[in-house]
Image 1 (cartoon, rainbow, N blue to C red):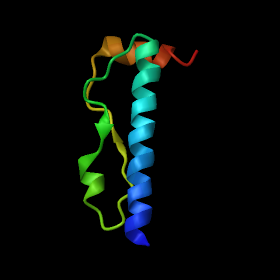
Image 2: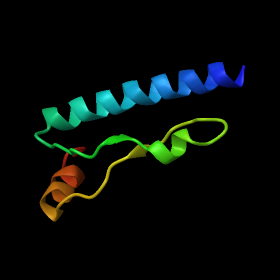
Image 3: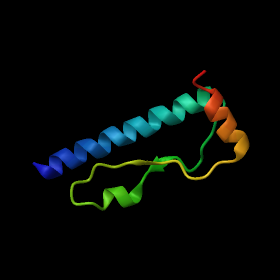
Image 4: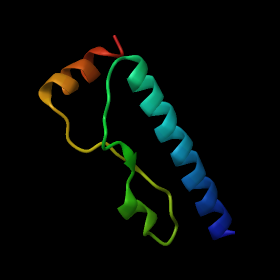
Length: 68
């Protein structure tokens, strides 16, 4: 049961990261390092997180303005 739950969590995370990447690209923002956090996959009950990595101040400013 844990393995099945973990697989669903990973699948959901992959879809979410893909959707986030697409939404950001629509706003003209690219985060090359956006991915599933590999360290979160190493846990016993794998429920992954997203890793954004670093970005420039210009990109951070655009991210802050995007939801407005």
